[in-house]
Amino acid sequence: MKHAPEAYFAEDAAKVAASLTGELDREREARAAAARANLRRA
Image 1 (cartoon, rainbow, N blue to C red):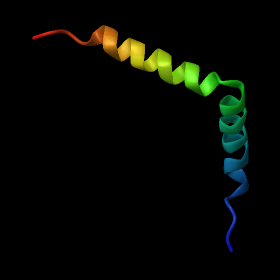
Image 2 (cartoon, helix red, strand yellow; image 1 turned 30 degrees about the vertical axis):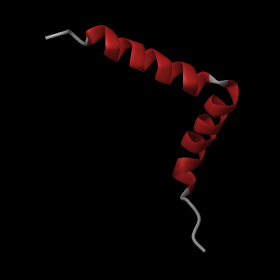
Image 3 (cartoon, rainbow, N blue to C red; image 1 turned 60 degrees about the horizontal axis):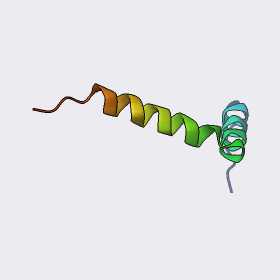
């Protein structure tokens, strides 16, 4: 069995922390809101 390289450890840990704190959800919501704001009706 192979494991992920150590170089990805900090990035993966940050993703887990963001998920646990809800930060990831807030970031996704902010990106979606920004995308909706840039949409224009034809």
